[in-house]
Image (tube, rainbow, N blue to C red; front, side, top):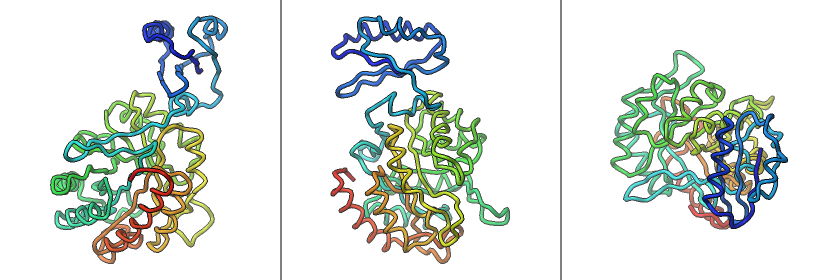
Length: 341
C-alpha cells in the first residue's frame, strides 16, 4: 500500500502518521522525492481502512500495490536508490542515479602477485571496484574451488595496495563472518533463491550485489531482492548476467531488455555482467555498449593477466590491455548518456 502525502507537510505530523501505522503491526518505508513524498506500507494491509487513511489531513491519496514485491518497487520509492561504498582517501564509490560504476577483476583469486597486479591494471583503466572469487561455485566437483579464506585475505591485500573496494561472492551462510571486511557481498546466480541466505544478508549492514538466476523470471529476481530489503538492508544492486535459453553459441543469453524493465519496475541500481552472459571475450565490448545504451548503472567485467592459464573462466576473461580498450569506449558512451564514471 502507498500513502501519498501532501506537499510541505511538517515532519512532526509525518512521524505521527508513521507511528500510527507501525502500531498496527505494519512497517513503513519513507521516501521523500523532489516532488512527491510517499509512505510505503509493508505487511498484511488487508485490514487497513483506506478511507480512514485518506481522511487524514496530510494525506493526498492512498493506493494498493498489486505487485508482490513492495520495498523494491518504484511505486514505493520513485527516486533512484544510490548505493554508496566507502572508497580510498574518504571518497565514495556510487552506483545508481547519475553514477556509473565498473567492477573488474579475475573470476578467481589465485595468488597475491596475480590479484595485486590485476587490481593495479584495472584501477589504471578506470575500474572503481575490484572483484575476485575466493569461494567458487563450479559445475564440476573436480574443478578449482577457490582459495577460501586465504583468497579473501589476498583481496584485502590488493585493496591495501590500490584503495579499490572489494566485491566477492558468498557461498554459504557459515562464511558470513569471513566477509566482515568485504565491501560488497555478491550473491551468485545459483544462490538467488537461497532465501535463508537472503534473509541473513538483510541484516548484514553491507551492500549486496544480487545476480539473476539462470532460469528465473524478472518477478522472481525482484522478490529475491525483496527478501534482503525486508530485513532492513536497502543497499541492494541488481545484476543481469544472462539467462539459459536454447542458444548454444554464447555461454548464456544476455537479456538486455531486463535492464530497462528493471529500471521501470524498481528503484534499485541495475548492473550487467557481460562476461558471464557471453563467455567470449570479443563480445564483451559490444554487449557493454548495449548495456550502457539500455540504461545500466554499471558493468562487471572479468579481467585476468594471463587468461590462458587462469584456474577458472579464462576463456571469457579480458587481458588488461583489452580491458583498457573496452574502458575507453565505455567512458565515452557513459558520458554521452549523461552519467558520471
